[in-house]
Length: 143
Image 1 (cartoon, rainbow, N blue to C red):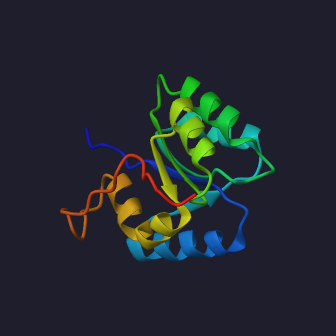
Image 2 (cartoon, one colour):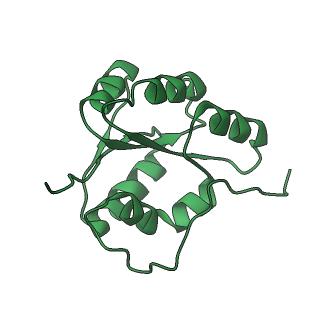
């Protein structure tokens, strides 16, 4: 049985990042569904395997409880969570990781590696550069 590619969901309100994600998804050849309501996100995440792109700085949805809820419902359908935030938000970085966020990146690293990040998480597409490996968490010494 052929493995189905994951569904890509994004909880992002910053229009700059919405545009960046849409452009990268188009280049990579995947669809990303942007969701603003928690209930819709949880429903979508429990219906199939998915990758959730989460702006951890999004003030409309508290990210830490959302990560915990997403991870609590992954028994049948695995959910990978990619979070991004400002490099100065070190406390939020640690909290997101503890809550179960699979990958936490500063905004700049997220933006620079977005195409490859989407390729790596879409199991049906080959990577353009298999030597590129993104770290689980980026520790930034800037405060």
